[in-house]
Length: 57
Image 1 (cartoon, rainbow, N blue to C red):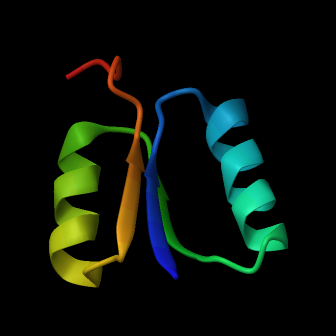
Image 2 (cartoon, rainbow, N blue to C red):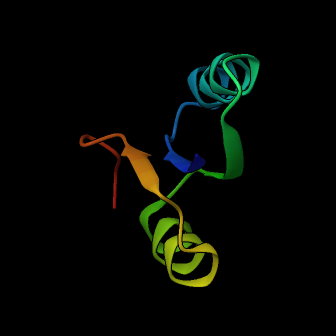
């Protein structure tokens, strides 16, 4: 499963990448902001996006 992670907290983002990778998922992008999220999902077409709903604009 191809995954994009959007989280502004660096430590949490890195932890999610590690956790999902260890579970056999392919993290195709881990971004820190909404503009990066839009670009990554448009370009990479992941199966799922995990998004911090309280991420600053």
